[in-house]
Length: 432
Image 1 (tube, rainbow, N blue to C red):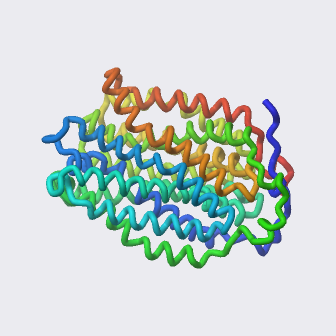
Image 2: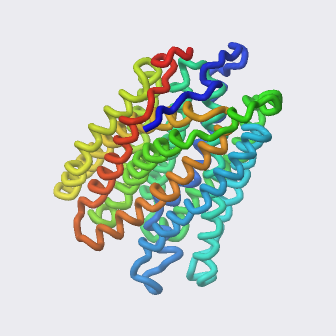
Image 3: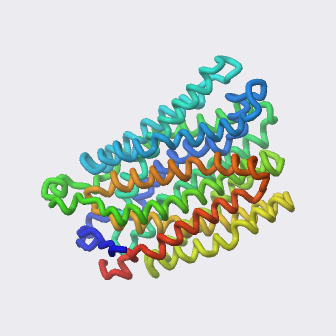
């Protein structure tokens, strides 16, 4: 395969005054966390949403339809990545991030207030789908500009740490959703959780949107006008090789991420355990993923991106199927939480360097749109379909280990790309 060169701007020195201290960058992370909380909460309350919008009186496949709706929310993510990502490259990272946040606020409020099937009939699942599509468009446009902002705001030798915030805030959103779900399932009866409990979780996310908008308005801009005006044609060229390898890596890690998020649904639907226990697993997933995220960033800055993500991929491939085997046979909270903890740490450890490598291979002037579109495609085609495919394959084959096998296959593809891709860490390339 032809060697992939690093973009010129990766080697260009930036004045120290242009770098943002890590505490300022948390403003990006907070907004990112709120958007992912709003988007992912749908998955964690899939069983309850299915009872509300696809009742048993109308279909025997309510959960499958809910997971399909969850997956369809990913259809508009590439469109958001392309349109809002290009806005981030042409106008600036900050306006793009403000737009995605406003759209997510509209979508999450609409989802929370949509009446049930019992109240308005078929209009209910239609509205559910429409708001879900808006969510997908907004989140598709979030990743490119925010990731570009983080790498451009960071000193070269700390890019891994700064970009760790991208996945760390996503996992913080999982943790927050798990805590909310755990609390609601503790306080409310199952019928109340079906009727209105899940709506409370969505409204909590909507209530924080004004705060997020205010915080993001205070951020500086990392893409200045003269960079766009004086750019050479080569600075706007998209490296096809980097895109192909980045897609393979991100697709594999994304399938694992959404496969692990499915464990809560798996515990309720396949193992017939309580929602309370399942949300406890979601809390464990969020906490342990944060450990992997914040560890991988500094470690990849010091030792390189490839050693970190290759190690994580190998270990995860070895552990996945045995973990699901243990959950299926033992069916206890301890086993589910232990399996979730190990897998989520490994997944968090590998995802950050994979995204970092892909981002560092892209020129600055096309970074927002290319990364946004690439990430959205990986998420939409592979991540968005994961939970539906796993559930469908499980019903088709009767194999309770289907999630483990599916994620292992995805990791094998990602591992191949990780072996081929060039090391991009400044400590390894001398581009400090």
